[in-house]
Length: 274
Image (cartoon, rainbow, N blue to C red):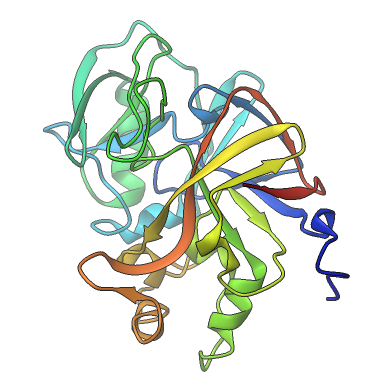
């Protein structure tokens, strides 16, 4: 793909937007995504937890990749092979549960026995489904964010951006190319040069401003095939040969903080700001 002259900033465009209704489960591709205080509206507002309120991810339960959540008609729908679809009507009056995401603790609302039974059965792992209510403010990673920056149940930031140029550079080093879903981004752009995003500090997408605050250190979830839940060694093994930062891990993609609410659209131009 030709990206035109070096000065034509608008040649960088958004090629994909993805929302993950449940942390660490399948994402939903969007053509338009409203953005609120926590990021894309509905992104990671649900989470699967163990009996102690600890968050579960594909690290512990790879089959979470096969749970297909969909936000539609005011409800959360759960789908999975061999299971009947389940409609989960958001219950703001459910039992409050203290939950943990890494070092964070916050209050969530349990979404009931039916959702817990469906997920426990499909995942073959006892668990509960919880929701982050509107009144609960979870701050973004305070090492890099301000006191007013919020996040849902994402690890630390409301947005993860990746570029097709960087994925292409990685895939050229792999025996079998991998799709972008291994990296679970919210925003994918075409990009001009591989890993050019490492040098960005501020960008604008359409009418929305973003701060590019921290490279994303990648974990074992990237080695899980998002369509089969089978785990392997790539891409971490290859990424470690050229994307390792001493003491910080293996990097791919950038974490973003947004300046305010708005709407993201596939096809929008991406411009760099000083």
